Length: 260
Image (cartoon, rainbow, N blue to C red; front, top):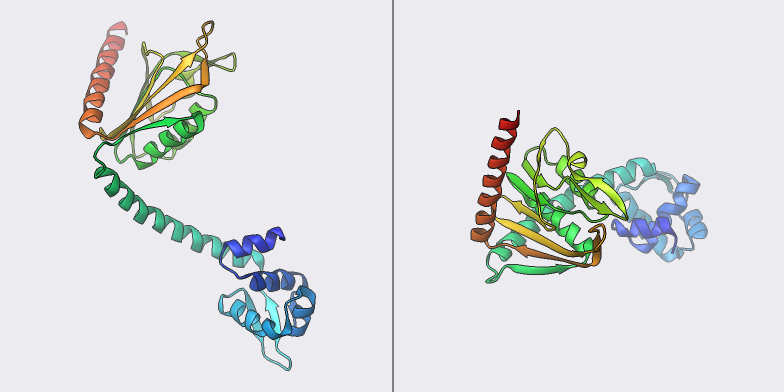
């Protein structure tokens, strides 16, 4: 299937409507018979197809004998459709997230194991997206591409209080990565700390995820295939860990002030 036709079908056109619109983008202006012949749409169908395209505001119909069908600019049409779809998707995200979070709150044992680096990172990003007021993280190591992905998502949330306690460095693909430097942003409070080889993210004192993995014996580099995340939505447990995090953060700030 032609890629353009597949895209147009993806935004709601039928196969014939997509074929007719793609054909008209090359003809610019044509009669129904011309569109039918060029697109291989049966003449018995072409008038209804073109009428539907006009109703959907993809083409204009010019009076005359015969009628003339004028294509609208793909920039105009597809930009409009993109905006419409984005709006519908945003509305669906809002509605379904409400349903999802209500459902999650009713699960009797809200703890899940997550296997695989990609799934773990995806869940961390979801936790950040759902956060309402704060994100607190303890970072003892990073997976490949994880730091950049998390930082990108955090930058989208200037409304959040973001605190990070991190080991100074870790190794990824035999290269030393400076964790402190990576997350050193204006809106992120990051403190160097003695963090074990685990990772923790806490959102709003309501949900959290621990990540564990095995490491090589020499450089203590992550062995990705051993990674496991423990996603926990017990609020009492998350709140307890968040309080311990904030206590550790306060102690580090006091210690750093004394050094100054």
